[in-house]
Length: 137
Length: 116
Image (cartoon, rainbow over all chains, first blue to last red; front, side, top):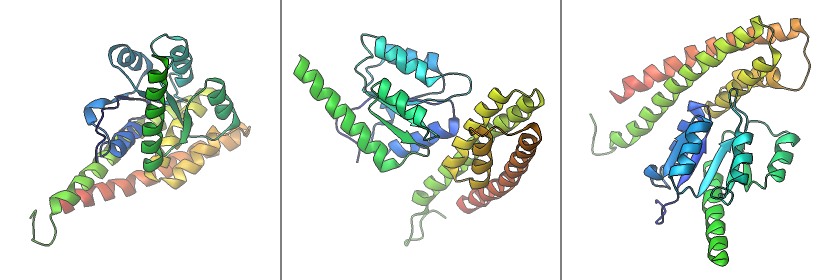
């Protein structure tokens, strides 16, 4: 069943296989028009600028671009800094974990991502983010 | 035939179509990655080699291509292989990928025939 309130999800990964996998796993639970899949950083920034994104799922290591740079930029941007970030990684190295903690990312997931865990995390972090917004207003 | 009264095949065909699409996307992406791995190794550019191996390992894991994943992971990993060892791994990866392509192409055509 699709969630009643629309959650805008940004997914950034340079791998078409990974993007296909994400879309496939999310399409039953979320409105497909609210899932923005981007294979490069400039397009991802464009979506962040134009859409009211509720959660960003970002691959950390990409051969030609760096997801870490995007996350760092988001954390310095007035409008983007509160968007919960879930990082996706193909490796489980300590450097990835350390990076995640340093940037206060919400969670990290290993590829291939577990469908239930992915959906749970998206719902959980957007709910927490909404509650924080309500408290701060 | 789409509905035998016992099974509405359109439902299963939706998943078949998704698998066929995934295999096609995988092969397009990984033909490029495999090519770039060979080019990086010809240039002896270890950094670029590891980056493409990382990408190849990730998508291989997604579709369950174990052999390709394991070899790509070795190339991507921290261990400092000498040129001879790395060259052998690049060859192994190429062989494993060609073998995988043969299998998944066969799978793809089987699924296409089944859904027809």
